[in-house]
Amino acid sequence: MQKLKWWQTAVFYQIYPRSFADGNGDGIGDFQGITAKLDYLADLGVNAIWLSPHFPSPNWDCGYDISDYYGVAPEYGTLGDFETFLREAHARKLRVILDLVLNHTSEEHPWFLESKSSRDNPKSDWYVWADTPPNNWQSCFDGDAWTYVPERGQYYYHYFMKQQPDLNWNNPAVKQAMWDVVRFWLDLGVDGFRLDAIGTIYEDPALTPHTVPMNLAELRRFSETAKTPEEIELKNKYWHDMFCHQWDGPGLHDLMKELRTILDEYDGDRMLVGEDDNIAYMGNGGDELHMVFNFPLMRVERITPDHIRRNQKTRLSALGRLPVEGWPCNTLGNHDSSRLYTRYGDGVHDAELARLNAALVLTLRGTPFLYNGEEIGMTDLIITDPSQLRDTMASWYYEQLVNELKIAPSEAALRAGETTRDKNRTPMQWENSPNGGFSPAKAETWLPVNPNYAAGINVRDQQDAPNSMLNFYRNLLRVRKASPALIGGEYKPLHPKAGSYFAFLRQTDDQTVIVILNYSPDRHELRFRLPQKTAHLLFSSAGRSQKDEATSRISVGAFEVYLAELL
Ligand code: GLC
Image (tube, rainbow, N blue to C red; front, top):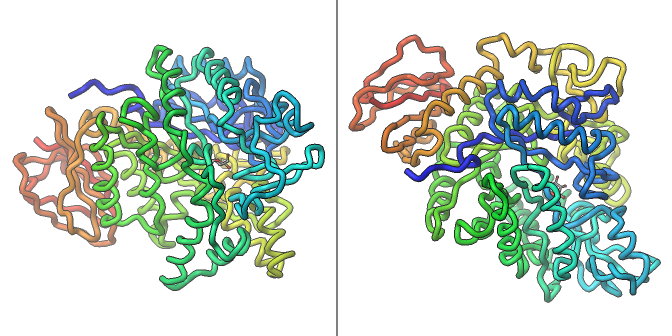
């Protein structure tokens, strides 16, 4: 077997800096806090950190609107604090990748301030300008995609919020400026980047209008109320049709090749993972992005064995067709999506389903990405008080619902909170004390802490409880680390028609592991015809006492996660 790179064997853990750990007691997470928790992460058993943006930002989009690519947001600390964090992470063998936002800057970035100041300044062509809106394109966050600037008497384009103007990537000077940023952080020693919204960098040069008979707010509302299969299909079509001309424009492959060349100049196998599921962005498998996310796995209401098998078949065969075989990358949650505990729960067996889904991400072939808090079973917290909303997407939608669509404020608040992202960004719950141990009791945290910290959803309480979610993750991570087949092995599905459980092998030349995820409340007696006769228990969520079973008949309990080495 080919020797795997660090990013192929690693388990990544996403830190959302605003919500991870508050070191100075101001209610906002920071580097001091993160650094103090590195032992926790090392002990959990993850190997790499993806850090969501830590740069200075006016925070219209919670750090994804960057006003200085070379700095650290003052509320998170200083560049020195960042360097300490990086050094301490590396000392614990934790790699660190940063979030790199290429598509847009903040409207407060000096480049934009200069660009918007006149039509003939040196940076006048660094953003996308037009005399009049050339089409009906929408911003995916806040309505019209073209916003007027009186200084220039022109409109600029923004795929995201109006506070996030799109850079003009057809301008070579923009590229050079951004590649300088990339080198700056690589020189400091970061191990790679998660590329934000990579598909949105280039648009359709013909500026083709969309054909959806609604604006963004109406489409959001329509999506919430769509119930019948026809309505749901139409809603999906509308989302596609509304934005299809604003994605995947020509030029991206060359751009990714250029960026990859820069990374490859450095030692240490620096890596790129794209926030996109398009395998084409991996180029020939060796010359563009190292990985893209398997988002189709998570884009469902329910994770079912059939869905998983179909997903694996499609993804793995597409990756296998690349000239250099592509490496998969799986996740079930991040700062943009409902928390996996809430999203894939059924209201009755949420805890069991969360464990099954965690095991899924940690045993499928590919690099797993976990989102901070999922290891203790954190849940969504729907914010219904509009004054507490921090996601601009939410406050914008609330205003639209009330003012344009004439929805009652109480319902509007609920819908805005439910369908946007504050709910899955609340502070990490470290212990059962006021503010969940994230901040001191007296501090006002930037988003409310989920009160369920007091009901056992916190690190401290789970640390010593052998059956806690935290120990489930820890133990499984340990088993994964010790099992070459789970890290690098091929994937072979078993019982391809089973509707209520998902069974598969992970296999290298030297080791075969069987994984059975029973997504049902029923016990199953499963019969396998395998060359190996004994299944030696590696892990079970059911507290089994018997270590070995005959592979001809393995019984799994309700919602059990079962892993065994075949001998
Ligand atoms: C990505 C980020 C998201 C952000 C957007 C704009 O999708 O994950 O949080 O709002 O890009 O930068």
